Amino acid sequence: MMAGLLFARAGIRTVLLEKHADFLRDFRGDTIHPSTLDVMAELGFLEAFLKHPHQEVTTLAGNLGDQVVTVADFTHLPTRCKFVAFMPQWDFLNFLADEAKRFGTLDLRMQASAKELLWEGGRVAGVRAQTAEGTLEIRADLTIAADGRESVVRKEAGLEVVELGAPMDVLWLRLTKRSDDPHETFGYIRDGRIMALIDRGEYWQCAYVIPKGTLAQLRERGLGEFRRQIGEIVPFLTDRADELRTWDDVKLLTVRVNRLRRWYRPGLLCIGDAAHAMSPIGGVGINLAIQDAIAASNILAPKILDGTLSIRDLRAVQRRREMAAKLTQALQLFIQSKVIGKVLVNGRAPLLGRLPGLLRWLPFLPRIPGHLVGLGFRPEHVSTSPRSFGARDANGT
Ligand SMILES: Cc1cc2nc3c(=O)[nH]c(=O)nc-3n(C[C@H](O)[C@H](O)[C@H](O)COP(=O)(O)OP(=O)(O)OC[C@H]3O[C@@H](n4cnc5c(N)ncnc54)[C@H](O)[C@@H]3O)c2cc1C
Image 1 (cartoon, rainbow, N blue to C red):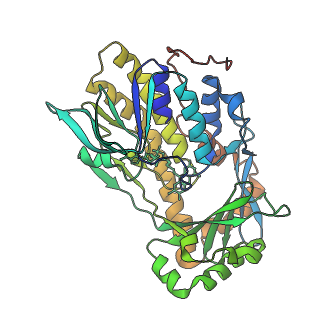
Image 2: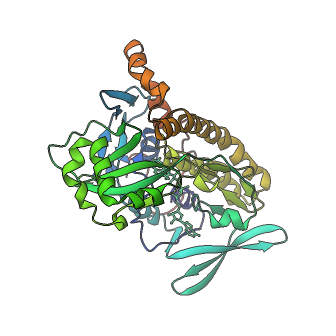
Image 3: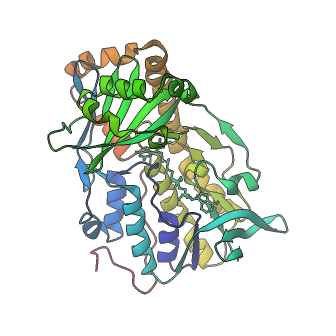
């Protein structure tokens, strides 16, 4: 969506395909990072955006059973907003879609699923998509695969994927939020179990972490036992765990961490999870996907406009973004193996045990994760200017 918006804003006729009929999927994470909020300001959207219901989270805390520790602090970031905005991602995508449509150069097609690439003389010349009305062929100077971790397009392009692995999957479920619930804590780790809570106003969106591939065993033990486990990790949820009536109320999200060796073919570029599928650890995948989109439009839009786009430019996007993705994945893999994997297998992680003591000595430590989550390794800024009718300037007019 961000790539579609930016290319359209630069004055390029852009077709954006979304396979679903709406954006009402709840499995992508709800975080709008401080660096993205800066970009919203650069685009002139920030004020309008912050009028939509959201929570402003300045620190992230973890409950380690007997104590609560701050693990990330966003209050010292060199950004306009020193918080992560939590907003259901469908609201964020609808907001961007409405803004993008103002440019008049964006053709957003819902229920249009890319199925195959169109090739012309060894170059990707567009896609063939399935829509509610039948098959649609779109020819393009540039095709961007931003179709997530199950990317059909990257598979069609035959790009080589390096699997990095993840020791866990996530169970996604909702439980009612009450006005007297504590809300300072984001993650809970207790007795070998891990759960994160996202505040969605009326309800808690809960992410319950399980060792990879063990859902069948959990189901065998029964829903009653699962409800009991939830109450053990987050005691204030005990009285409402029975809102989970059947296993249909519990969705499995498969975690995958991988990346492409090469993000492009002539005429095609992969970005976001399609280029580097991110673990949920740190909640940073959305930030990276957006930063990829900005880098892609900064580098490629001027080339498309003057008709000089070449494979060198696609390589330049990968060069600019690859190190940030690799470093972030390296950190995620480190936490997966030293914390998540250890807690799930042994019930405890020595590194986590040392954390409270470390924080007493170095109270500023949470600023480092705050920086990595809030900004990432290489924040991007929009360098293209708006060309089309309906564009807002940086003051939002
Ligand atoms: C359990 C879990 C929790 C997470 N929580 C967070 C979090 O809190 N914060 C965070 O920053 N990151 C989080 N992440 C990572 C984050 O979800 C991804 O890194 C991010 O969504 C990648 O964005 P994307 O635009 O590349 O792909 P996606 O968000 O997956 O978007 C891809 C889009 O393409 C559409 N699509 C797919 N195939 C086709 C097709 N063939 N034709 C047309 N459209 C298609 C999809 O419907 C979707 O709209 C989480 C990941 C997991 C697994």
